Image (cartoon, rainbow, N blue to C red; front, side, top):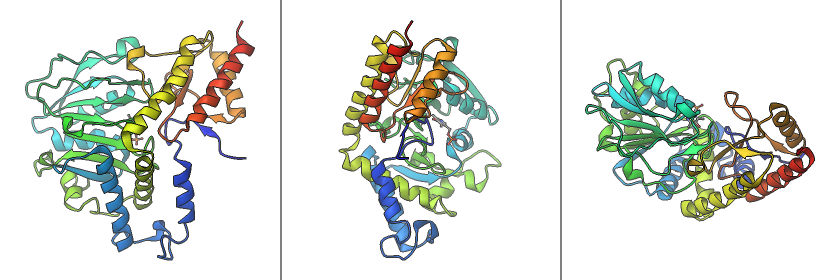
Length: 361
Ligand SMILES: *Cc1c(COP(=O)(O)O)cnc(C)c1O
């Protein structure tokens, strides 16, 4: 069996070129006689891998000098805790609740201080992004937290919230590198790698340097202090070395594709193939309000659970896999990250049209 079209929300499809290149270097990385997996993280070869990953990411996102890039572990979930532990100086933070991940981050922050839900779209099952132009930002809030792209529900912020001068912290796990980002608008950005960037096991953090301090909540473990990792350039302990190596290759691949402007253009084109069809289909329909549609995660339904199940089964047989919606939402979800080729979406839509013809009453 050849490769399938993998619409998984994460871990997700990686660029085939990256996988081939990693395969070629598997047994002997650039004449070292060993795999990157077998290499000391203090070696010259790995030092170069790390340096290349960071500089390529910096280049893509135009990350200014006053921001530090960290490659850590523990996934986005660990950032749900690390953010308050390190940034909640007044023990107050504001959270905008636009989906399950946003809510989980909010719940975690409640362990450490007063987390306020200052806006939410839960009233309409997270099918939109609330108006964030004039929110009741807490006067003593240490930061405002958002989940930029809602992987499960398929919504994205088209405009970032007005935080009234407070630090903006964003979970960009499922949108990072899908389009350009003005990093200077954020105090901290974090992203689990396994959606758009690389294999599971790496979480990237882009943090403004003045936010890296010794002044953290009492009891914060050494490993959960940004300063520990910043001072050691992400080499305080053994990093997720192979994962970082693959991330570096993905960053390079994006650069070779023309960078983030080109990625955005491609992603918009790709997403519109699917959204345009959903808008005209008599069988399938998208589940979120049009103006907040994500370029990365596209949930849709037929409105009939049995028909949804039939679609997922037949799609799988045809090599379109992992189209089942999140267990809490049902229906279908096509995750069409950077590495999903245009052709994958075109063929999926062709198949959906065929399915519609055969199943419309
Ligand atoms: C997948 C995802 C998470 C969870 O990531 P882990 O690496 O499993 O902790 C958090 N936030 C968003 C937006 C996600 O898409």
